[in-house]
Length: 342
Ligand code: EPU
Image (tube, rainbow, N blue to C red; front, side, top):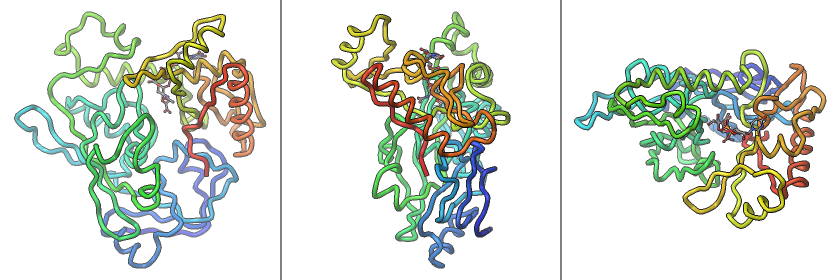
């Protein structure tokens, strides 16, 4: 079913709780709906919206059309001989619902992504990740709709060119043409706990994979998140506001030699080093920074929150600029936002 409303308040469809309006809101269920909208010339000047958990409405209004998938359908195939199965989830299914469904059925693969806000469409675009798992690790293919040709298109996970919080969908021409309609994930009944993250390794030390269930990992991840991240029902935010910056090995060595305390860094397969944005923000002295109603979240400083509930987009961007400047001055590293600015 298609639902169209003009000049719509979509604040409640975002997690930051900032003023957010759009010129037109179109909600759809199926690819047939998209074909009809395409034929009617409605798919122009679009902002596809998932759970609204990674967006910052800087001015409070987007004059174009916000497109949202209301289908939450999930379909799970019969297990194959190797114990894997395919799970197809519509763009509008929330990622956490999908994690719960998979864990309830004892299927491994997405348990470490539990508790991440947002929907499958956004997860596929952004390659969301947490606790040692990224969306790309389970992605088999992504079903899309090409708003220029009006045709359905399937991209293999390889064709999605996933990187750290990055994909083909974030770059032209795909960013201007492709809407994610559903994602196909490969999960497995074979025990495959991912315990690379220290807090999880400690929690389950001494356990064999067979002694663990996806639900146990889900519970552990959820409690780790609850301890660090703001509860979206109580405090508005868009999760991690900044990406963890990646620097060359040489830059990292230089930072270490110039710092009086060790700078935490995680060496990547490429030889580059991923830094902790939270650590940089903390050690640049930004934890006490506020701007109007916006503030830094104390237990995870790479999150900017709508502390008063009345913050504006301008408050958030002013705080963002102060943090970027302070970290650049202290460490010579430029932080880049993960949150998409509208
Ligand atoms: N830290 C400080 N000061 C503090 C708090 C933390 O210095 O006050 C440092 C510590 O060194 C700590 C590190 O920050 O080790 C935090 O690292 P953690 O692994 O907890 O999280 P992260 O690397 O900062 C990433 C993702 C999160 C994801 C977590 C857990 C990004 C941008 N963020 O954060 O994703 O939940 O790992 O795997 O990659 C999101 O994308 O919205 C998100 C929350």
